[in-house]
Amino acid sequence: MAGVRFLANMNISPKTIEALRHKGWDIVRVPQILSSNALDHEVLELARQEGRTLVTQDLDFSALLALGGYQQPSVITLRLEVSDPETITRTLVKSLPSIEQALQEGCAVTIEEAAIRVRRLPIG
Image 1 (tube, rainbow, N blue to C red):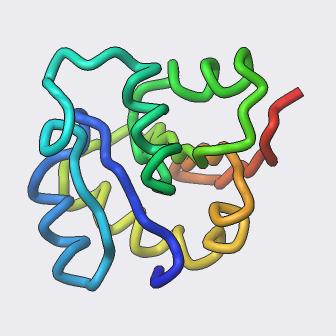
Image 2: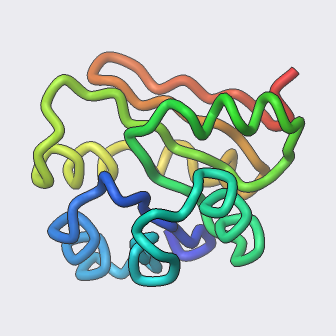
């Protein structure tokens, strides 16, 4: 994932962040940069300014992208039945290579156990 930089929302475990960094990914968690009570639109703006793809389990971010008509940042929403750090890490490592190009172009991605849905931005 050399061309994609990531920003993990607060609901992504530091264990996942460390595991992904160990694999060579450029990923930081929101609390490393913003206050823990930062608003969703502040998180999106940070991702946009830094050219990072937001990784989250919060459904609000895709809705904000759609309502705002944004073309960036890309957002990955994880909708997994089991959301422990090991499962999330394994799911991301497995899923991301197939969507890397779309992430660079601007998209909203939903990753579930059985499917990956990719919607180009802006969502209309």
